[in-house]
Image: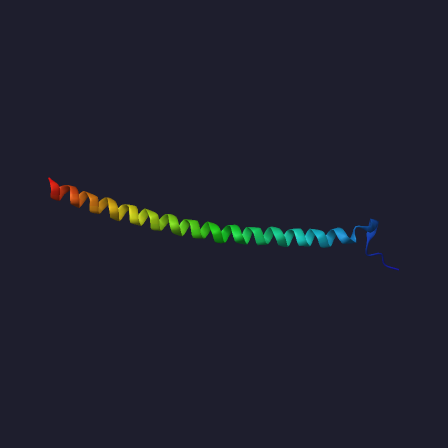
Length: 63
C-alpha cells in the first residue's frame, strides 16, 4: 500500500503551487510595467532633447 500524503501535508503542495503561480503572475506584471516605464523614459528623454535643441536655436535667433 503506497502512502501519498506523508504527515498529512498533501494540501500544502497545492497551496505552494498556487503561491508560485501567483508569484509568477506578479513577476510577469512587474516586467510588463517595467518595460512600459522604460519606454516612457526613452520618450521623455527624446522630447526633452528636442525641446532643448529648439530652445538653443530660438536663443541664438534672439541674440
